[in-house]
Image (tube, rainbow, N blue to C red; front, side, top):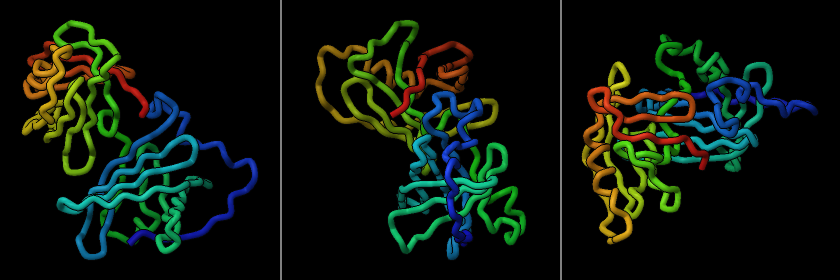
Length: 231
């Protein structure tokens, strides 16, 4: 159970120290992903996105059920307070520790520093827009893209015409495996690359992130290039 506390925000405390590091390249949002304690389930997958305008989105997953909440956050002396419009939820306390968020009561949970924390990740929960496929430039008009969701290892996106979904697995050494892709079945005669895009996703075996660019590769050969876009 996370601790709850209250804190009066003083005038002039709008500057947020989370938004001055390389972890926030677009200076608009930061995502933290990991596991948090649960009263009757041990732990649950959790993702929180913090926006520069002091709003947040929080998602937790247990089995196939996902719970989502949102609201405003504030900070004071290394602490984050999440304030939900739902008065029964109350503000939730986190401690900021480098690229990690720890529950306020983490010291009361044995081994929590190794397990009950949220880490800032580079590839997950980012809207990656397809820019190049097998060396050929892709225009912006249809905006094919993908998002690797932190909860339940889901991949979602659009191939330029049809929406798609599936599963992914990240392994050591920037390994990636995308599988079980399914898509809608709309016919768009002007989109000639969509089937190739889907094939490339299932062929990729590793990835590389440089600045705001994501490369999907197979045997170190670049199959697709994506650019990060804030949505």
